[in-house]
Image 1: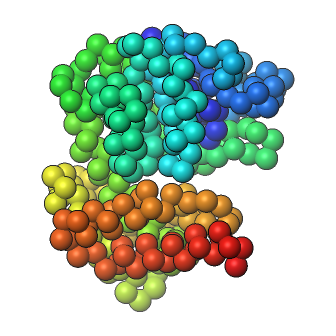
Image 2: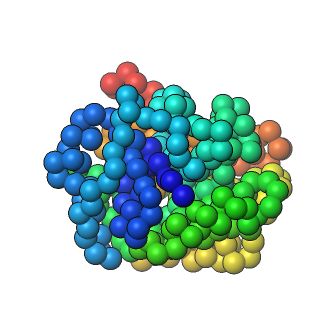
Length: 309
């Protein structure tokens, strides 16, 4: 199986690099400046599970051809349009796109551009970023990738081939029998985490250490879960228990990547995550006062950022 990873940032670079390290046929589509740096220094991964320096096959826009089985897409939501244009020349007749992005709105866009039958479902769990010298830095030990067919036979030939290609990589990978449910459960958790940490400007533990903080987290989680249930994807008991354990722990240092971006004054996926969940709640007549409050808070941030205020 030939795999193309769009970009070599923290997320795509980590998963693509670890797959390459395990012997998978992986190429990276990168901009010329990034290609030059990777050619000179290699794709460097710094991780608690072990560092690596890899020398992947690199392609740029002017050398890209349509000869890949799967394209892994891990961009931020606000870069999706440009990502689609970048990967379009790589889309052969049998090529599938595997987005491992946050949220669910990307599927409507990708389905419209390439056809739903060519878009797999996917998600990932990792905390990784680019370091100051362009290296990929994994923070913590969690690294997992889940993928699957969104319709039809779950164990399709292309998903089984991808499962085999990733089997020996130094991260957990799983071919899902119900990828929609997995995606929605992550969407619920991430929305709660992002809304809470952005609104309160602190970690889960700091929020839960305040008077009423645990109740706030429970109420916020329940709002997202009610939207998921109204959308046809009620959160399963195991996922509910796991989310509650993490989100109500006064010793939990976790924050959302959205909050970390916000704290640095960067662009955020506010409407794609918190905004989308709140909007779905309104459409489905699910009351989400805390989500709507967090959405307004993020809209103020975005307006201030746009005007430099």
